[in-house]
Image (cartoon, rainbow, N blue to C red; front, side):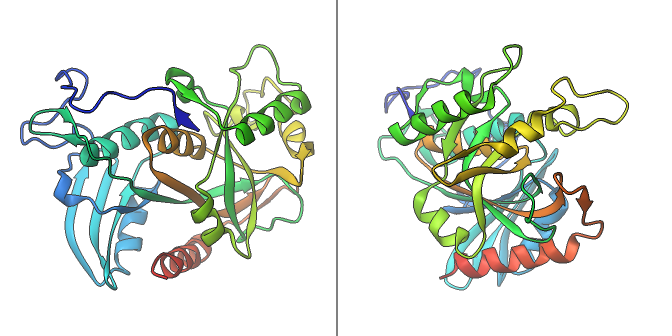
Length: 299
């Protein structure tokens, strides 16, 4: 996914368009540019930040505002930030725009910089598998994010030819209900996918706008598309299948593509929706995921 157009370098942004805190930090993340590394891990759970940064050799910055918690430090000879986004693509919209502003806007003048700086963003999350045989505790690495939310519809973007072909196959194969927002599709960074996807499940990750009905769950309120999971699980195109549900990847991939950053999602499977299984104590599996992602990130 690419931007159709971006703000021209040298553009001065109004205070209402890029709000800053009184200390000059970005509004929601409450961060300054020198507190962010070029390599960023994003996690949903604020409590997971400490679990990642505890593995750093040193932590140099700690910032916390609302659900957004960030620790920046060193592991080996590289700097990393680990940032909690909270849940959902609406939060990813905030996080990606403010991360980009930290590196590509002069915050003292609110002026778009001429030299673009690209971040490498890796999400470590949890997910529910849609395909039989993907066991709780396994890792799924997202080759694509299928946006069942609507965040990217508010941006000026265009798909690559490969993304467009896959999107067309999805729309033809899923029989998508007319009353739901049209899904969008964005691909992972190819180099990051090759690095983190090796020896793990890879496929299309469906990013839902909620946890219950939007993922086909029936508690007391019944899902409006009762066969949603079956439609997704049955799709296949050129060896690609919809492997899992989660709530952040589509916006992460889409906005990273638009803004010129590299992104990839690695998730620990905590449930298999097709088999009705759930990993009640998934902490050990998440810890193993963190260790593996950090090991591959320092290669």
